[in-house]
Image 1 (cartoon, rainbow, N blue to C red):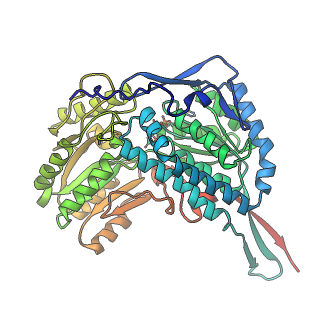
Image 2 (image 1 turned 45 degrees about the vertical axis):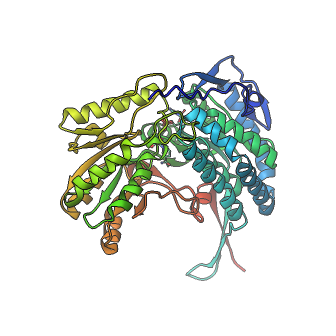
Image 3 (image 1 turned 90 degrees about the vertical axis):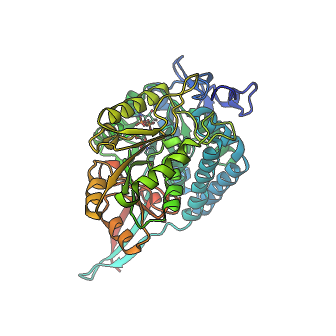
Length: 495
Ligand code: NAD
């Protein structure tokens, strides 16, 4: 296969990039960065430069905090119904523009168009959900047990929020933060990943059109996140850091935020076990695994990273699953026939090569794939391995690619211990026809989210997040997502 047969490089400007690639979006205006620097955006399918965005400096960080502070008072005083209607309009515009947004995501991220369409639908849903939640933020009222005073609890917007997002879901990771923050009455500064800034800027233009007032959402790209984010977190008006990204960077940011005791929400890395018991519906489990492993070509925090198959069905499962993986069409994300797009960067491919080489050196056998594809673009083929040693690097690290290692197990106790033998605890998948066992294992596996006989957990109406070193706090859900952007104020009174 020649992955370069379908060029994804646009001849014209179908995404309107020229309208926003010249400025940071601060205070409702597109402003040039204080410095001269630019950040090039690469199409991972072709390695071509598709755009260059401004590179914010410390001076821009100060301007962005100022803009968010200037808008804070009037936004928190905006009636919830009005805030709700603006969020609803963001949802409607995202749905109207979904095809263009999906193509832009595919172009800069490389993911298959079908995955990008799914992402836009998911990302838009955070606006609809939080438009509905914005008018249901209520307080509490009680009587102190000892009598006398009354306890009034008022939930107030936490203050200015700094939001940092990764490249793997350029739209959804941003809207999952922006929508609840705005519903809560906060103003925000978003720093998207440098690999995929175009979606974030395209959405900023859309929010403006939907009626989000100037300064309520600010978006800035920088190649020097360490000093730029530190400068923002040092400003006492910033009270919230919401980060989605790797556990390593999350640790660094927690330490930075500790200096001003800033509230942190952390959506970090995962190492999801996918457990298939002998009594499972094998076809349903393979269907689920195709989603849990191959959505976004494996570049998802919830991706199945360790696949445990009970010994009675292991070989049959491996054979059927390998047939499905080997048949996937690899190609540029924007090609509608593509089922597995490229990785985000050359470095990501090199990491996968290292993990596969390590697994093979410790006795793992490759059933399909296993070799980087030649030609331009960062392509790695769908790969299945068996007999992988549990101590292999790919058992301990996020693979973040289309590589599925299978591990054989015998007993329920053994697989629970293996599943929990990691510092991560984001998602886990369990397939069994015995619902009692399913619920028992679900309660013992250390993860924030369990998919029982399903390959997908994400839903804006459900609390998304991890335990252990996969994170702190939750996004989405009935009250969890908004609560991250509010403080409880207790008023004691008596009458
Ligand atoms: P990353 O941690 O390298 O970067 C994430 C963001 O942080 C980017 O915007 C990056 O520019 C910025 N950043 C990097 N170093 C920084 C620093 N020192 N200070 C401030 N900002 C900094 O992660 P990534 O490679 O972009 O994304 C992949 C990771 O994200 C994976 O580990 C994946 O599991 C995780 N992820 C988690 C979730 C979740 O909900 N738990 C969702 C998606 C991705």
